[in-house]
Structure formats: C-alpha cells, structure tokens
Length: 193
Image (cartoon, rainbow, N blue to C red; front, top):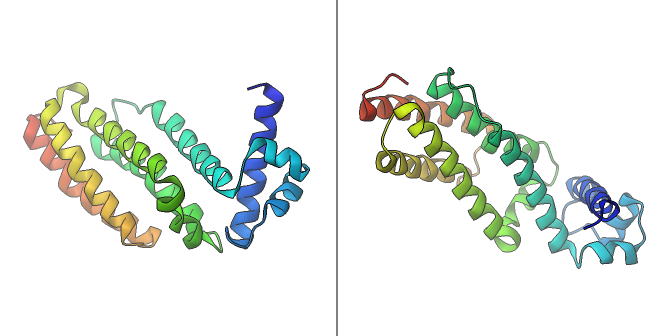
C-alpha cells in the first residue's frame, strides 16, 4: 500500500469515526463519510467496500494503537498491581470511556459481535498473553499457573464488559479483582509482587 493510499484510508477512518460517533452507525451513510473525509464516493469505495469494512478498520485502528502502547512495556520496578492496573486502564477502561462519551456508543459497541468478533477475540487473546507475561516476569509464577490465572482474569474482565457496566463501576471491579489476584500470584510464586 502506498503512503498516499494509507494516508487516505487513515483520513477516512478518522472522519468515519467522528460521523458515526455523532449520528450513530445506522444513520450514517457512505455519502456522509465521504463528505466528512473530503473524498468522493468513488474514492471512498476504492478504499472500503462498505460501512462494515469501515467499522472493522476503526476497530482495528484502536486495537493497533492499544497494542502499540502495551508493547512498549512497563517498568519492571513497578509493583505488579500497578502494571496490571495500567494494562486494564489502557486496554479496557480507556476504550469504554471513549464509548461512554459518545452519544451512540452503545450502538457502536453492539455491532462488535456482528462485524468484528474475530478482531475482538484476537485482542482478547493478546490481552490475556500480556497479563500472563506480567505474571511470569521476574520468576513470579510458573507458566502453567500464570496461564490459569490469566484465564481467570480474562473471564472476569469479559464478564464485566458483557454486563455493560459504567466505566466507574468497572474501575471499582478491576481494583477489586487486583486486590484478589496480586496476593494470589504472590502466594503461587512465593515472591513479592
């Protein structure tokens, strides 16, 4: 993909996100997106076949940004609860803050299973691995226990998200989860975390 094509797609994604956030996915037309992006409809269709493709591109863009931030890593000197808290803030709470601030955030989130379930499943696995990496870092616990614990954490986070809790409620529940998980990880590995 040429730089110009990439830049055009990025501009369309940003414009589409703004229009969809304002008017909702169903009420937004390809014409609305083309107008907001400053491109013709034929140019828009050269980049994206339909709104579903645009939705997926928006989600992919957000996931890529989150993964890039998490891939930078965290200071090993930070306590485990702070590293895990940062992961959950970046990967779970920030996206929900964004959606909570959108007039049509519920509608946008509601489309994830229909249009982008594979992207969310891949991201969920990525996040589970990121948590597992923090748990096994510096010899805190062995791989199998880290896998078990990261799976339990994944299920807890997924449960919070599926209950459609507010960000404030999720923050409290994530703190509660960390109060349980961090001592458990510590007792599994016998090392201070």
